[in-house]
Length: 134
Image: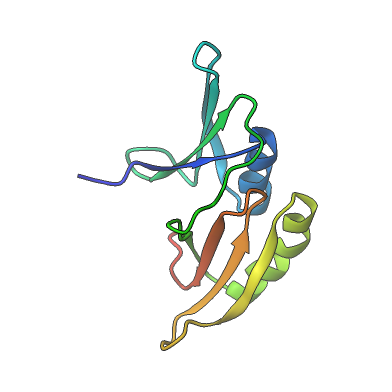
């Protein structure tokens, strides 16, 4: 078994595609529109299945906002230099409706350096220092 993708429901598909591609550097891998079922899917990632897990963005026609609930936590992305990454992402994120919501620093009770950026729909993405893959 292996992790294939994680799905997030979004209120504006193009805005979310722009955020994940322009801010977080993912590639738009493919889209699928299902007008009869009234939804569109966009798959993004740093590579495609089966070598890499993907992020599936789902836009349900006519739904502009979702309640986050209390169960969702975050997606995690490894970065080489968390300070430089946050500084480089800050302005782009704000332009596209996101924000750095936790500045880089050690995780509570540990040494791992993390930061959080929130996407335009309110989903949290954790950035983790030193966990990137070239």
